[in-house]
Image (cartoon, rainbow, N blue to C red; front, side, top):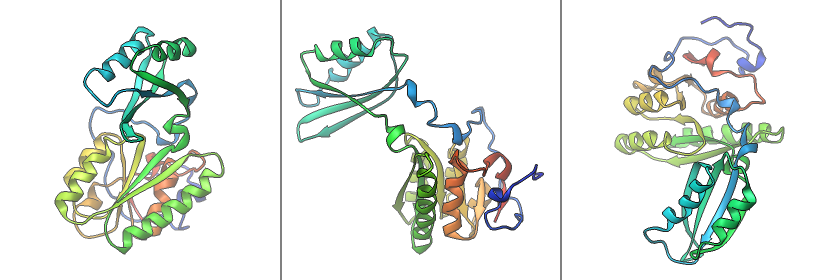
Length: 255
């Protein structure tokens, strides 16, 4: 891999990288630059629909039927039982021609108590960095990721960091696979030997940063970093549009 005019942001340590890690993941999924995720939220209508009845069969169907009649596209839906038995359903919609008419038709449903327009999750939480593993090293990864995310968020980015401390290969593998199902998750930083699960999530477009450790995970990860704090920092830089660190130029490197 050639450096192709790398800048100081490409090498946060100031040193050129050493050996290579994994190659680009194979599969049919096209590459989506994580830096561009969240830039096109202006076309999203986010609605929080509170209903009068407890959660029961047919409620979601009644709501989505109205949305279908307006030819809107549901890009995300979440059902939450908030305020005890008052159920709320959160929708993110695209291609809404008349938002006021859609809200009015939802409010006329007998089961609906209130429809509230809300900012999208992308605008609030932005891209998500997921940190999985156990021990002090993972704590240092979170420290680096949160500090770097704050640096970019004050410049207009939206990056949040989620973490779960886990030990045990079986638990780690299931949690790694679940990252691909999380909304807005763009990168995973981890410790632990669960190479097969890492391979699966990379094929679904999740960037994987691994600590430099024994086992087969480093050979499957997109990027391998020895220092845990720097691993968190680099994970944020890989997805922040305010940073020049590019996964297409860094994939396969070890620091």
